[in-house]
Structure formats: C-alpha cells, structure tokens
Length: 310
Length: 248
Image 1 (tube, each protein chain N blue to C red):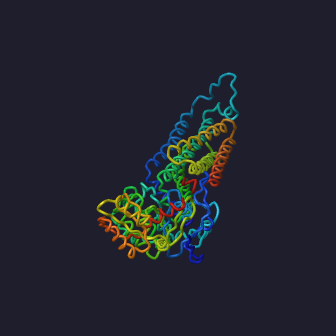
Image 2 (cartoon, chains in turn green, purple; image 1 turned 120 degrees about the vertical axis):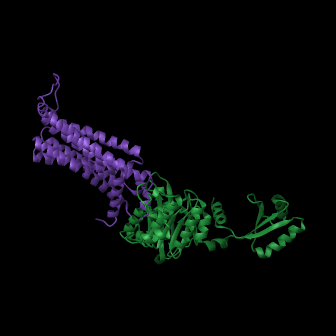
Image 3 (cartoon, each protein chain N blue to C red; image 1 turned 135 degrees about the vertical axis):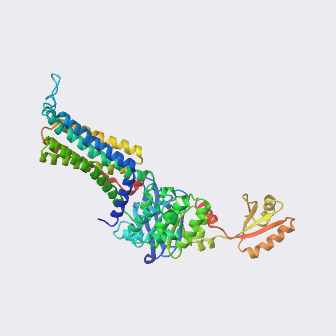
C-alpha cells in the first residue's frame, strides 16, 4: 500500500534507494517513497528496519548505494543540497553532548550555519533563559532535548526530521517535548522516526512502515484505520475465561486479553451488534459490567501488519 | 573562507582553548623538545672535546661519520633537526586526539551533523584548528631557537631556512596522520596507540636519513620524507574517509 506524492510537491523522496553498509549489511532495499509538502508522517518499523538509515540518508551523513534521495528537490550529492539542509531542521537520536560548549554557544553556532535565525527567540520559546551559560552536558535530558529542538527550529525550517525525539526521557520531559513538537509540526512537513506508536499517532497523519529495509505500508493513518474493524471489549463478573467460553459459541474470533481480564471481539458495527450480543450474554446468566467499542490504535495496526507479513 | 567553515573553525578553536589537557600537553612537550633540551645541548657542546670514541672496526654511516669529530656539527646537523621534527609531529598528534577522536567517542558529532554542514567542512575545520594551535606553539619556540643559535654562531640564515622547512614538513606530516587517525581511531586509547604506531616508524626512518645522508642534503632529505609521508596520509585519508566511516 503506497501513497506517493506527485514529484512537484515532494518535500522528501526516496527513489529506488538501496543502502548496503561496507560490512555487507543491507539496511535499505530498493525502496521508493516520498512525503508531500506539508504532510506529517511517521516512520515506523521494528529495530533494524532501516529507519535511522533513512534519516541519515536524508541528512547527507550516508550516501545511497544506489538510487536517489531528495530533500526539498535537491539530491544529496547536488550543489543545492546544502541550501535544502538550511531549510531543514533535524533532531538527532540521543546525541552525545558537549562538555565544553554552552547552550548559547551551540545555538549561536547553529544560527551561523543556518545563516539565519534568532537565538533569543528560541531561547524564550523553549524556556532556556536560565540555562544559556550552562555547558550542554550539564543539562537534564529534557533540557538537552529542548536545546536540540531549539537548534532545529532556529531557522524556521520548512521540513523537520525527528529521529526518536523523546527516547530516554522521563514521562514529564517527554510530555513537554510533545507539546513543543505539536506546535513546531503545525503547517510544517515532518518526518517523525519513532518506536513510540502513541507518539506517532498523536502527532502524525501519514505512516510509513519499514520492515527489513523495505516499505511495508505507506498510507494515511485514516486509510489504515479504515482497513481494520473496530473491536468490542467485554468484561464479566464471572471472569474472562467463563465469558470467553460463552462468547465462542456466539462470535468465533473472540479472544481473551490477559493484560486487563477482558475479552475482545471484532465487529463490523458496534452500535448494531453490541446490544444483541449483550442480551445473549445476559440471558446466559453472565454479569457483563463492561462493553466498550474500541477503535484500533496505531499499535494494534502496526502489530497486525507486521505479523501479517511474517 | 567558506560560510560553513568559519563557524566550525571558531568552534574548534574555542574547544581547543578550553581543553586544558590538550593545551598543556601540546605546549609542554614541544617546549622540552624544541627549547630546553636542544638549547641546553647547544650550550654544552661549545667547548666540548672534539671527537667521539668509536670502537675499532666499527664503520659509521656516512652521515654520522662526517660529524662525529665535531660535537657542535653533530648537534646542529643531526640532533637539532630531529628535535624540531619531533616537536612538529607531536603538537598536531596530541591535539588530533582531543579534537578529532573525542568528538567521535562522545558521539557529539551527531549534534553537528544535525546542522547544515558537510563532512569535508567538519574535518577541514578540525585540521585547521590543529594547524593553528601547532603554529601558535612551535613558531615562537622556533624563533627562540633561531635567535639563540644565531647568537651562538652555530647556524647561518640559509641553514635556519632548511630547519624551518623540516619543521613545516613535520607539521604537514602530522596533520595528514591526524586525518588517518580520524578514519581509524574510535577512542582515546586507540588514538594514542595509533599515534605511536604511526610516529614510531617515522622516527626510525628519520634517524636513518640523519645518519645516512651526509651534509646539508640530509636536512632537505628529511623535509622531503616528511612531506612525502604527510601527502601519503592525506591521500589515504581523503580517499577512504567518508561520513559512514567517521560515524561508524
């Protein structure tokens, strides 16, 4: 399933790209995909799927073995690529921090390299005022991530590449970063590479799923949801085992969810099917105290898709 | 200078200035090698008895045979060029460990890669910073040497120019080696081991040239060898150094 953008409106594009590392590892295998200008896409996949390799190909840190990688219309090897990079903000995955460069100095360096940007403005936006003179390595994880985000957004870039922006952060710091990202991603082409499916679901509209270096799915989140039926989550006082036993005669695909003691069943239309199912379960003497329709989450869809391909 | 290169160079120089370990090591060793030891010897050789006792039946190499009868000549033509070459080799080698390898070891390179830069600019900035530090350290030391040796009447101006060529060639050589170091070393320990593995053989060849080639030609040969070794290191570095090798 693919959703290729028209060439004229592609903010970033991979065309028949293969990346094989010097020791022979095939990280990306002849993939073609693109993100349209203005789209907010997440790049998902299990470990070793090729996500970070894709980000590194886009940032010019790696060269493709074959095929072409384009950023804002410029190929990575072209002269105009540096200009495209100046219009792109990148948040790397858990970078090491300088022990001898302060927040102010790093942001000033970023402003000079981007050839634009107002350091005072991003310091204010990311509430870094009290930390300007601190060296980067002395900041907490959350503030370190704020500095990296501030540098990425300093030049008001057209494109944002985010590689696991909240990995390693505590829940409060991760929540702060999400708030900043929500604001930053508004009206801005974004590619978010993450393992955090809830984060991807909250922040993105499109999904690219990689597996073993190939594109498994490239679709909008809405289209992906259309493919998957809603579920009913049921719980009874008699317990999941008894409920499952009663339901297996009524709905063959019912399955117990050990994590919360419920039984899940896939339905076409919860509003139509739930009342009848409930009536039959109550008639069998089961004290059903929960019957909740649930839309499949991105995590459900991701696991389903990856398992389908296995 | 390139719009990207200037801020990167400023960053490298800032980091070098703040790295007390790098600055201290890169200053103290050259002071010893280029000023304290040679000038002490220069003073000591004045009025020293001529000639050395060579055991019967031992034939000295041509470069050494010509100077053993005169301690001052031995110092000026053999030891002094060796000290200068070592001084020139050591400063960039030490600073390379701090500027090139430290960034790789700490993974802070990712922070720079996130900004609009090219690998070429990152490395050129680092090599330029090393060269600037080396020049700031060795040029004043060479000036002290030159003034003292001229005052003692041990060298002529043309000979000083040859010695300066040796110093400049050793800086080029060491910078080339630093580039190869960037390709191979992932941490401080490996960098120090590689520095030793690369500079050790150079010293042996340098001694071979100084002992084997007679007259002023030995200084020219030494400078040529250092330039050749440096160029070879640059060619290897530029041919093989890619982002993925530097990032690996």
